[in-house]
Image 1 (cartoon, rainbow, N blue to C red):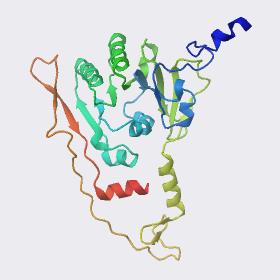
Image 2: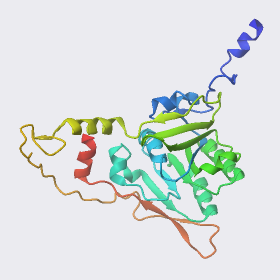
Image 3: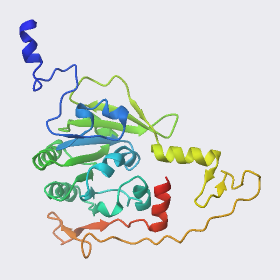
Image 4: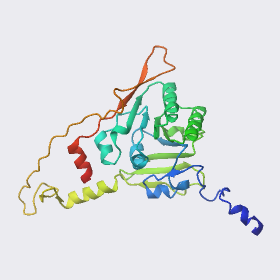
Length: 291
C-alpha cells in the first residue's frame, strides 16, 4: 500500500470512510454538533440541501436561523412558505426581517419557477422553497441552478419523500425530540460514511437559554430595578414596573412597492406576490438586544 500513499494523500481523492471536501465553500450551520458531521463543516454553498419533516414549518427555522443571520446582507427568498415569519422573533435571532422576500404561489409549477428565477438573481443570498410535490428531475434542475450561481438552497419536503431518489447533496430528516422540545436530526445522505446516530439539537438559542435562566433566579432590569421571576423584589415587595415606549411596527421597503412575479403557467394572468416582512419597532429591538 505504500506506493498508493501519494495518491491517497491527494486532497482531490475522496475515501468513503471519511467526510469529503465540498466542491465549493461551506457556511457554518451555527450548531457545532451538526457542523462536525457535515463535509466542510457547514451547509454546502452552491448545492441543494433537502430537509424532510412530517409537518412543515416545525423545525426548519430553528435549524437554519443561525446560518441565515450570518450569510450576508442580501435578500432571503421564501417560496411557498406556509406561514408569514414573525419579524420580531427573527430579529431577536439576528436575522433582519427586511431581508425576507415571501413569494406566495400555490401551483407547484409556479413554485419551481420562482425558485429557479430567484437562484439566478445576483442579489439573492439564500432561497428556501417549500416544495412538497417536487419530482427528482425538477430538483435536479434546481441543484444545477444553485451550483451555477453559487447560492444556498434549502428545500423542505414531507418525511414520506425519504424513500424517493433525490439529487440533493445533503438530505436531513428533522423531527421533534421524543422527550423534549429540541430538534432530532437524522442525516440520510451526505458525502461521507453513514451517520452512526441521530443528532439532538437544543430547542433554544444560547442567548435565550441564558436569559430564561436569569429569569428563574431574578433579572436586573435597566435602571437598577431587580425583578424576580414572580414579580417580587428580594424583600418580597412588588417590584416596580419599568415602562417602555409602545412598539411601532413598520415596513422597511426594499422597493417602492411589492413586486409581482408573473406565473408562466397561469393563463388567467394571476401572479405570485413578493411580500415584505414587517420589521420590529424600537422597543422590540431593545428586548432582542437584551436577549
